[in-house]
Amino acid sequence: MTTLALGAEQTQTRPKPASGVRVRVWSRVGLGGLLAATAALYLWNLSASGWANAFYSAAAQAGASDWTAMLFGSSDAANAITVDKTPAALWVIDVSVRLFGLNSWSVLVPQALEGVGAVAVLYAAVRRVSGDGAGLLAGAVLALTPVAALIFRFNNPDALLVLLLVAAAYCVQRACEKDTGRWWLIAAGILVGFGFLAKMLQALLVLPGFVAAYLVAGRSRMRRRFVDLLAAAGALVVSGGWYLLLVELWPARTRPYIGGSQHDSIVELALGYNGLGRLTGDEPGGLGNLNFDVGWGRLFGSTMGLDIAWLVPAAVICLAAGFVITRRAPRTDPVRAALILWGGWLVVTAVVFSFAKGILHPYYTVALAPAIGASIGIGATLLWRRRSDIRAATALSGTVLVTTILAAVLLSRHSDWMPWLRATVAVGGVGAAALLLVAGRLPGGVARAVAALAVAACLATPAVYSIATAATPHSGAIPSVGPARQGFGGLGGLLDSPTPGPALSATLSADARDYTWTASVVGSSNAAGYQLASGAPIMAIGGFNGTDPSPTLEEFQTYVADRQIHYFIRGKPMIGHWGGTSTGSHESADIADWVETHYTPQTVDRVIIYDLTQPQKNS
Image 1 (cartoon, helix red, strand yellow):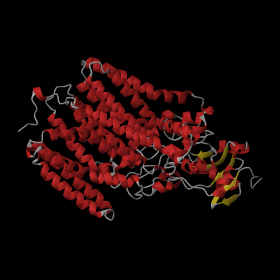
Image 2 (image 1 turned 90 degrees about the vertical axis):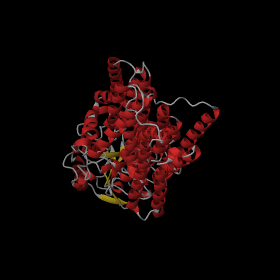
Image 3 (image 1 turned 45 degrees about the horizontal axis):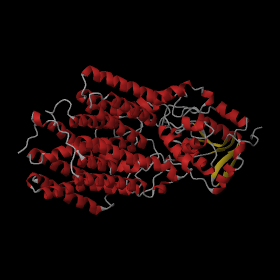
Image 4 (image 1 turned 30 degrees about the horizontal axis):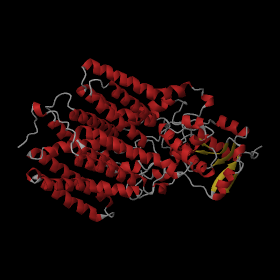
């Protein structure tokens, strides 16, 4: 019987390249099938979601028509205010819209292709250390995670972030394999830097795992490894920091206001609202502390469980088993290096997501999916190769049993949806778990059938839930997984963008070229709906939450006096105006009060608007 404690002659666990035309053909067929299935899942009926997150679609509309708006990520082509993120993800969509015109496909296809790319790169990374089967398993786990099926069909910046971080992880693995891995490490730093330009400080959560993997397993001397890491850090700072420097040095009067900040500062945005504030809950201009589930159970709870929890225990078991198996391997063992890298990614990100007190939406958990996939792919393969050892067989069996039980628990939250699935998965999981205990004694073909049954039992439920997610149109600022809108306390609908009727759209479009902004409204989501319908710039007063001090009342009055704004629209109330936050500017409320006091309302398509070019009521 084999042992989990490897001898020195067995410690180099990286598999030898497969030989034989037949094996190579089947490997290529498997990869092709995985990528084709992923593309089908992410691209099928994609336009059903319309503009998806209209907030970003309107910014893409602006960026595709104005270079300044593209550079800064403006919400409108007249450059009143930016979105509340750095604009790297928008740049990709902007290029697509410039090439193919403004439509649902040109806005959403880039994210779907980024998802296919992330699966391909994850396959390549895991394959390097554990072989084709492990790579296919890791890629399948990523592709079939429900939150991945949601985000790679949506136009939020998380899709680009995931692709860039997976590519960076691949580069770190390559750096660990070579005596001169500095350039691979620098490439990783550049990719993480651009990830910062997609989602700011969230991109840095992978760094502890990356650094630990290279320090432990890099082939050069320790001093050289430190120098290499400093070079990579420099590359990260340059690739991510150039944009912050550009925006800070750019004269404020010739660029849009930086949305999400209280002082027109992108550094404040990066370190505050989109940075440390997400951890502490101290986010001026944010929604306030809406979290009620801070702690270890959050990833399995009612808000995040259906997005990501399905395979988290399996990843933890496989990761722990992998470290046990490789504990006597040489320092430079590539398998253990990969386990450190992906395990560090998984643990650090999971801990931060579990205990963050600021704004944290369930779909952020897509950042965990690649690490879950890699941990399962590598760890399960190590265990399977040692299935004759009862300890490895027991670990495999326990992994399947825990995963299928968890699937049944998660499905019970919607007991009226496909009730037969729970029983089917439970029976399959129990059967596979029992057979895995004796898999080491079974003939090769039978053992492979047992492995296939175990994988199917574990992936069936997240796969079906992913398909249901893909089959459901999603819109608004906070999309959710599953066959029906689970929402986030109802916030998804409240942060959705309005769809104006034909009369209002015609009113906004008429004479739009005579004004800098054809209309203004509190909140970027409100502005996005009217802008996409009219095709003309709409000023988003107060930015996303309506709590940014842009414009001030005095600035707005000047715009009105100069006839730069035609209408003010009374939009849906924003979260910040419900008393959900005690910080942030109240300029938008002051502007709304001033307009309603001095101008006569009119109703078009059941929406109240004010013509700011008409005489004031008290004049």
